[in-house]
Length: 89
Image 1 (cartoon, rainbow, N blue to C red):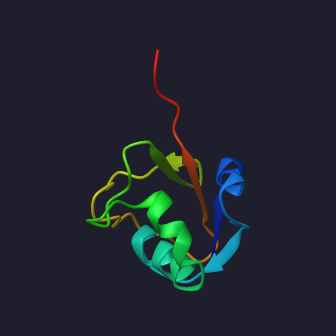
Image 2 (image 1 turned 90 degrees about the vertical axis):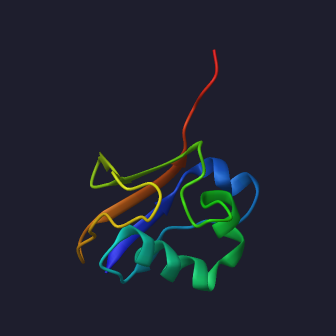
């Protein structure tokens, strides 16, 4: 199973400990985590199921390419990191 970790900034709003998730894609892995922690979904995904503008997801240190459908492949030993991107001037 892949490991999904969330930024500590999310911990200010709700529990988001690392989780193990099955799934062949980023979307499937995140869906597995959201099934047991549905409140996290709204912080990560928009109403269409795409990544929110200021959320970044990396798999093994590489940014995901498909931010809309989340089809980037995920292996059983991969590490997925979800965090809020910084923006502004």
